[in-house]
Length: 382
Ligand code: COS
Image (cartoon, rainbow, N blue to C red; front, side):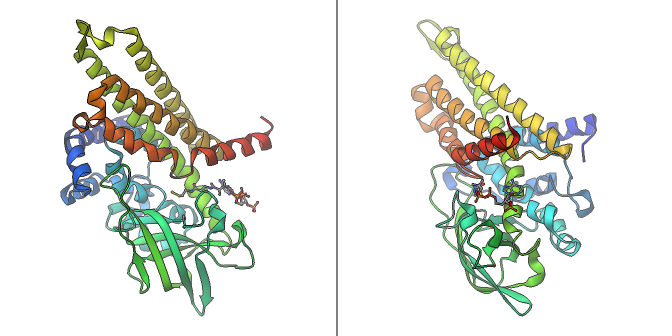
């Protein structure tokens, strides 16, 4: 549902203040401790951040994609690890259920997802199924009124905190590709489900990814999401939407880095004047600004198209491709503008440089986005 302009401004203003007053002061601490302070998670719940995208009838804020992207840009103005806390509930962990769930499934889980009492996670990737996500090997075999799940999922965001997983499995062993894949809602507390240790990552400390292991996990048949064989479509539609959200976060991070660069370039003096006076610095600032504007325009245009009911598979892939590569370039220039100060930890620039690297990889690598863009463009004839 699209917000009226006044409510939208109030929401953006509230999120902006939360980011600058509560999250930014904790960036270094969260990164060093690799943990999210529980009181901060409670505040995120109170603000309704876990339910941004959940329909109002289930207690969420029911934002349109355009409004969600505007909020995601604001959230991008701080360490991306904070957004990850509720990011799966807003996106990949909940949207399969929102788009494909039955009334019973939605009534059971969505209110808790909206409030943040249920943390969700999206389990697609496997050791042998990364970019080739139609190759999932985790098996789900029907046994009476349950499916029995066996297999391992890898690099699963928020797995160690999740109460509910959307799991892509192979229900039809005779169909090796996308057609044999089915999705399930799997509760964390089922016997046989275990979680691996959080991986040591390059960036985004405070957000965690782990293996999820299924050892004869019996999942009630009523927890299948969509029809048998429809799981790949569930995953792709969830990712179409997720890619757009991530693009908006990339724009926010780029805006944040640009603000930091401008402040530093005005303050730092060399050769008797602020480095902002030098045209080679100005060139880098101009490139950051231009590319950020382009990415923002792509994101907002695609969000409006999606809100209008159009398919945005290609546009979301293009936004993700451009925005994630763009923020990588902006972070690189930020290190350059800060010089030595950008390379040491004090200013947090090197942390952002590490944090943004994953944007080019998760929810589909840049190369997968290129594949999607090219296929769709060739299909459309231009
Ligand atoms: N929306 C709806 N349906 C889609 C779709 C989309 N965006 N993309 C594909 N499908 C459907 C196709 O229409 C096709 O259905 P039919 O068999 O009924 O025609 C089916 O899904 C298979 O599609 P396709 O042949 O394109 O599958 P491929 O195996 O070639 O894979 C890519 C397509 C590579 C694009 C896909 O595997 C992908 O996005 N990989 C990256 C996964 C990813 O992002 N992983 C990150 C982990 S999650 S953080």
